[in-house]
Image 1: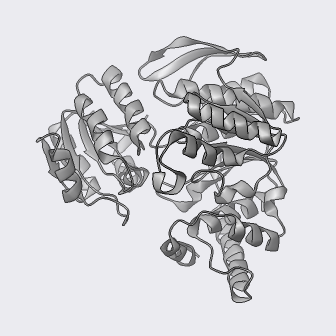
Image 2 (image 1 turned 90 degrees about the horizontal axis):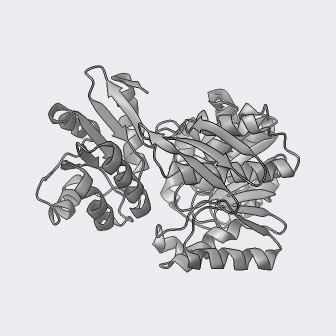
Image 3 (image 1 turned 180 degrees about the vertical axis):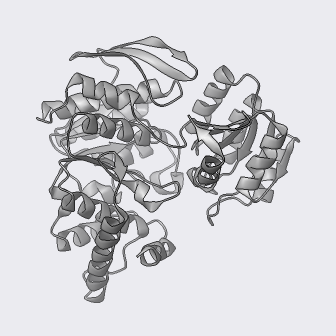
Length: 428
């Protein structure tokens, strides 16, 4: 099954809804068998998805989530309840979906084979139908308007943030990217928005107005008070509907305050549609959430630490730099690997002032900038850098010289090193 599925990666990225629409129709529209909450955004959408899903599970709802990409194991994309989907269930659903796709391609219903993401999206919907899922929180893969997940018709969704990323697919301006993200808005839907640039908010509100949808600024009418201890925020959140806390967020970083507020308002909007969601369950969604490689601190037996973060674009790098500046004044070593389509120089310029040394490496994907090339681009800004093409060795070598090492730049890089680190360390 895995060989058949991963072979589709050769198709690359292809935005559009024709394939996924026809594939899901042939499967009997599994995406219509559960209530969906749809989450888009440049950054923060994975964290909001995880928080919302955790809150639904805490409320006793038969809930699932679909996210991408995975770090190590494909099953991470498909979580039902509090665990990744069973391997046997995944294999059966995947084979059935792939068999269906092959039949449709053979008879001309599909002009081309589905992409990897189209296939995994259809697999997610089929898995959730077979498991009797009531509510699924679905993270957009790329953009929104032509993302494979956008065949959903959810009552509630969120757009967490808008920034410059994936410009070759989404456009070169904030307004253009906002229009693509706003593509998830459906008639009658409630859309929760995070902190957005004015030009992005104007685009989203215009699209919503055209479609008869309601836009709710997550911060409107709310008050968030609290402090940050050891990198985690302890908060009391007052919204027009309820009070939550005091509670400590399960995820590190001050930027998670904003994500938490979006998750709360999205769950409140979901509750208004009839989903059972008591306030204490929403609180547990914020405090009990686990989302690997998002400012995840790994401590080895010798006390040395690795901070693993999936920051993979300029806004993510800024959030990481703010966290390091406040909580790691010792300026840890940085092990960085970046994909070819990212603003490498921008990310490097943001991170260099808060780290002590840099090792350039590369995740095991053709999309990654080779370590030597990345090192040369870093060296143009700072001399203290060397290249190591093996990510695990790069981290171990940095740990031999530093008490704290930060690994960042790519979700794929985080996946390459996380399992090895777990085997040699205690996560906390």
